[in-house]
Length: 328
Figure (spheres, rainbow, N blue to C red):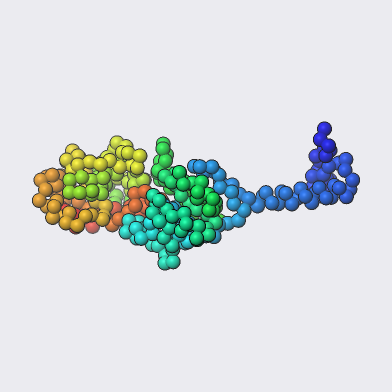
């Protein structure tokens, strides 16, 4: 038997007591026990891809080291104190817009630990792509690791999980549920617009130009598949692509998709329209001959739930506006 006696509940207070101690000693141990319970119940724990995050209070100063996390924070109404590649966000992501006053903490591939530490964050959010730096980040502030693209995982499900988990950590659960409800309503409305216009019958080849001969085509295992599914559109690239959900192909590969409408994600390189106009690979594509080339504003293919919503909105409007025979 333990030298401290048996562990029972006091009938009056409900406080655990050691029954073979004096009344004074019992009260002392009761107070210590209640203090221990109160201290431990103040800490919440979340598992992540590199371990666990434990916090005793809601974070107020958050640093995001990828744009998917930045997007999620902004959707939740949280302005991070610092983000990686701050100046690239307005070019490649754009929405939600980036508020003023956010500090730049280096590149997404190699953030500055010194710049992060200077901001005295109480939470850092990163992905498993920075796994080697995790311990260093953890030494600065509690660090949560979550990736939209993860082996064997569906990107949109991961993005949704990111939003909901960060909402739980940051005490913004209601805001997250509202964001997801709004996304679902917008998706359904866009799908109805396309169905009424008779625009859901032909597949979509969703591409980003690398040069005048090669494109990066979004495949069925990419984030934007969720937008196509939600809109009732087929992906012309039915096979999975690489880990990041795309395949690098030449324009001749699109020629093998005679029914596909070609949707080009901006930005494109300077002079591309003139190069394509004189390219036999381009001018003989069925989508070009049928004036079914549609160009949309930038959407970050490695973002979160808002990237899916933005893709659905832009794609719907482009199809309703009608196609062209070239990029612009």
